[in-house]
Length: 193
Image (cartoon, rainbow, N blue to C red; front, side, top):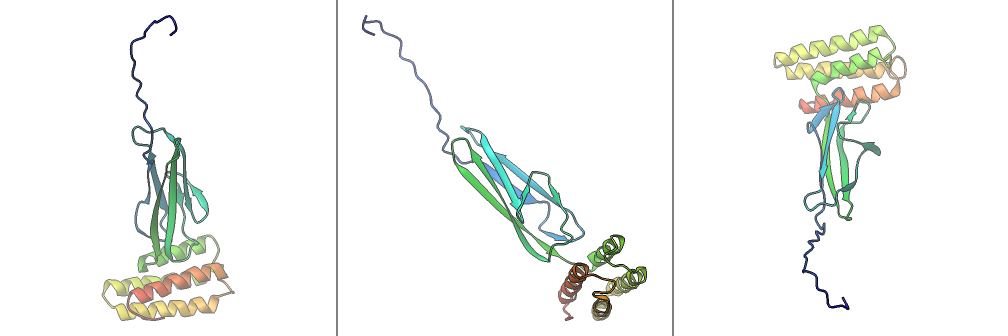
């Protein structure tokens, strides 16, 4: 100062956060059938000397997601689905992670699909529910015996009945998912529908 007083030199350490946050979004498996629930896991943190997270956002099919959210893929079309998560810290750096899963059909998933459609009255006639389930039970028995060609024939008979009930006791959306699933299974067994 002007009087000649001196102060001891002091040091101040300033930490500048130039490190982006770390974020990871995932599901508990890479493949699902429509009768399996999908759980999302989102982990985000700001590594030292972090300024702290200002936001963490995640999205699947236009829907905002949070850690631990569970979705029911029942009405989704078969195929690969992507999801993203983004974390931003107070200093500004941003990180994004993406992931994907595949929605498939299996011979084993067909019966629970029909059961749900029947329970929710998307297949309106009890007799049609029973007939479709009987075809699937027979196909499963033939699959256990290793008779793939018989399984394919039974699934084609299932499709024939499904087509006959389209717009009658089976409305369009349930028809669409069952038809897609059965064709997928037939193709996975090496057949054609």
